[in-house]
Length: 154
Image (cartoon, rainbow, N blue to C red; front, side, top):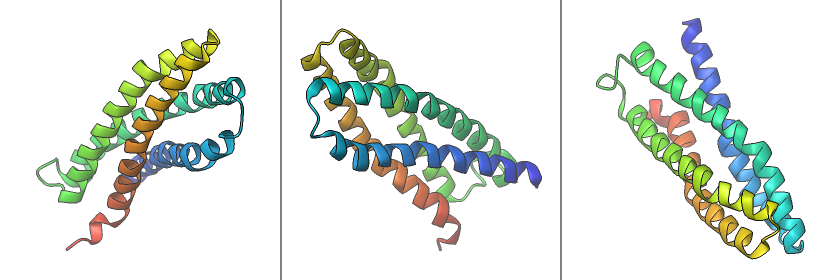
């Protein structure tokens, strides 16, 4: 039982870091940075993402490892898992795919454009990142709600 508790704790930690970071970025940092001139705003975002994205990778690894471990250990496999567990897994995999796309596409291009002081290109890539987060954040909130309430569903 202790190993399932540990896996669940790591799973929750990963979710809190990832979803909480997206929430803070989108609903707190984004409005606060809006008044800055492009070079300062884009440089701020580059610094934020450079520190946040390694934590997202840690979260993704923790979520996938603990989730795939708990499926057989706690639920007896996908067939034995309650529908909310399978739904949480499916939505989580969509989130991971969106993040991988964000990281390997818009983020790397954004980082390069900021480093080159190409503010127009950087702004366009930041807008792509914003749109991906705009999809991933509600998915993440939904997954957290499903994970927290699913066992009480009829």
